[in-house]
Image (cartoon, rainbow, N blue to C red):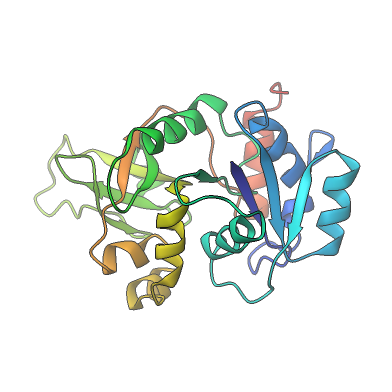
Length: 240
């Protein structure tokens, strides 16, 4: 199941999930992008969003206003929906209206293949040095097994000796879990690193858990600011 966490009151871009994306509210456009892959549910803290989803034939559930992260929100939704421990739960952010379906499918496939006691999967892609300098674009370093070592808003790794061939990788904020692992993640206390960087995935790393990463090719990016929205509309103007 794909669950889209949809908090209405974003601090950097209030009501951004309602912003118009070529004729559809952002959260609806995101849901429509992935609805062919699996059942889609919007998890929100807003009756307005519930009613909006109903207008477009998309299921939505009300969740608490007090969640610290989107993953905490989808966990509550998965419990409301009565999912089983081995069910696959995919967290697609509401601000990814141009995410490619095959990219989300890559997360679904990786979760289904996992036999780990704790299954958490996410995505990364190669980015240029200019994007790596942008704190709105989250970076990740992975190990030789393609597990995440660390995520940061800072440019990582630090290129101390100015090597010409350093690769920088951007994180795509889509997560896949087995339901049991999702519950486990949300039972962990928010970590110091998570609170400092405002990156929820650092909670798992702080607790010594592996996040399996899948490298993909994607043009999509999360829309965090009005400038991001303007840029995205220019880039994807001809995409339906």
